[in-house]
Length: 615
Image (cartoon, rainbow, N blue to C red; front, side, top):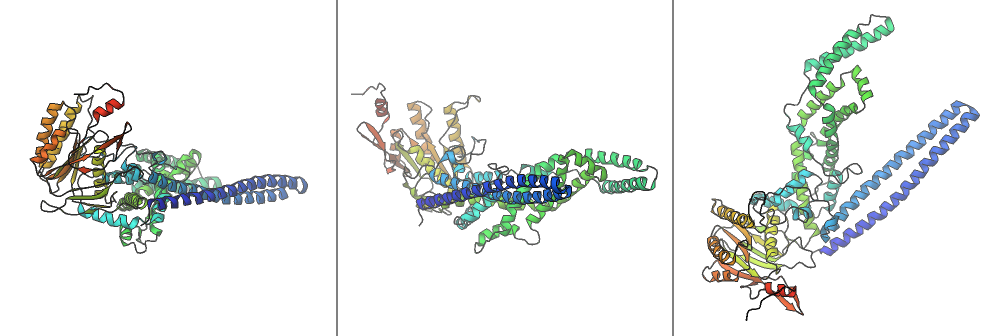
């Protein structure tokens, strides 16, 4: 099996090769720039000399020849610069892959701004979104919508077995197709114009969803066309044959009706301007998907089937839309727009064309976009699997109260921890109703292990690979209580927020749902005093054990480990530490049984705080 270092070295070689190609293109571009300057100066000098020596005809011929040569050089120079921009973006994509391997957050594209939902069962607690999050590590999408779809998959509250299986099959097929994935992204990025910005379909969707789009009535189109033709004929007759200036009457009628229709139609120019770039970008993406070679990758070919219909090719439809939008952009040149509007009702024609094109693609475009967004989200999961060949596809299977195990993990690790410091652990829960109670010292790894379980289940249910040698799990509704926050504005204390969160967990367990709950609770009832925390924790754990779910609870309260003596479905685990030469060390290994040590007083002493030592 390929190692992660092999992937890294391969990407480093590709980046270096692209850097050499960019240097070569830069030299070629500089030579073209020099040749253009030389051509311009030489052409100007030669034209002036011939004009003075042989007359204006010779000078004009030399000027035309010189300009033709200049424009030919400019054309080829433009191709070189376009190639350089494309190579530069290709190199940026490869550098991003390296950053994902190294967990170099500063080199990754910025995270999309998101609004966190504090009521979500687990998204905030598991670092699924944000600056140093799983979503940002995985997200290779070039569109906002593809990025949001990936987030929705990772944070889906309820997993669906058929969906998981289908995604796994596609991710497995896409993982080795690095060229396909990178070229799809490259074609979705408008190099040199809006580089670094994601495609946003907000305006496109708004246009498609607007069922009351103003459209000029047929009688107005025909009337304006007739008046425009009459204007031209009457004006020509007046100028050539001396006819009375009747064209003034028809033009007044034409202008009045035209201005009324333009006012009724609204700002066509602004709408067309907002749509032009998104549609041009889509044309590039869709053309790539139409022409891609899918070979024996049957699942990928089936997903992309809407792009392979020779009769209704998406790129052809989008070219028609782009032509109409380009026609609308004429309004950006006021003088030319006024001139052409005097001759023909240009805006009315454009509005009619936009309405016709919208009607033609209203049912087709959402399908094409849905496939693209699906490919982007799948490509992100596939890219993670490719860059991390030590990850594996989990086994997600049906499980009921009679099945065992409901969860079994071997060498489970956290994807947001660098390989050189990551510690992997084995863990399992055999039956529904089982609860693991983890004790251990401060900083020993309890919270990280809870998040490791949760984030890998999110990856598993999204259809991706997990950081484990093997993971078998039943489908669970995931629920966490790890990073509880108080609210000054709402007048909610930390303790009350935690109580509400834990009550929501009990409600989820009591809900009539075929899927059990997998819960993760970190430092239960940390917001109150020792006596009440112990009483509340005992009662709450008793309420969790044996219910329609499984879970893991971490705590500092060693008194709680005695509950395992009275409840067979509660099992103790712990993390520990060692102290040598006045320094504390952790191995982050999960062990069975209650924690034999504590370290709070030791930490206080090591940092110079006054500590009373009991006799």
